Image (cartoon, rainbow, N blue to C red):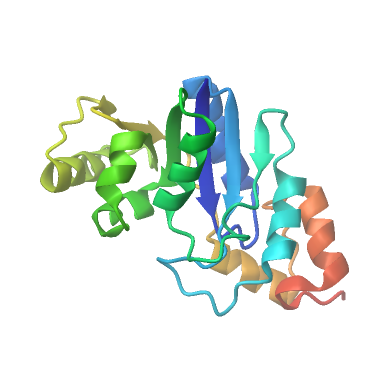
Length: 208
C-alpha cells in the first residue's frame, strides 16, 4: 500500500491544502493519506494557533475523501510534533507499506534542519510542492544536490519528487487577517470550515 503523510498547523485548513494533497494523491495513486494536525509546530511561531481540538475538527470537515484519515497522533503525543516520531509510529503499524511525505517548498528548503532528517529520508519519499516556473524548480534541485548530494533529473531523483502546482493565492496569515476583519473568505475555505469558523468566532471573526 502507498501511504501519504500530510502534516501541518492547518490554522485554518484551506482550499490550498486540499488541492495540494489531492494533486499528490492522484499523481502518486496513493491508497491512503494521513492528515495530521500539529500540536506544537517546531518550525513556526504559534502565538495565534487556535486550540488543537478545533483545528482537528476543521480538518475533518475539510478532508472528506474516503482515502483520507485525519489523525490525532501528534496532538495527543506528549512530546513535540516531530515528523520522525510520526513516521516511526506509522511504520510500526504498516511495516510493509511505502510512505510519501507531502511538504511545501518552503519546508523542503530547510529540511536539513529537521530533527533526524536523514532517518526521515531513509524511510519515505519526499513529495515537494513547487511553483511551476523554472527558477523555483531549479532552486529545489540545487538545494537537494548541495545538501544531500541528490541529483534530481527533471522532477524525480533518489527519494525526492517535485510536483509543480499552481500557487495558492493567499497565505494562512493573510487569510486569518481577512477573517478577523470580516472580509468574505469563501473563495479560500471549504463551506463547512468557513461556517465552523464563523459560528465559533475563531480568528477574531465577528459577524457584521
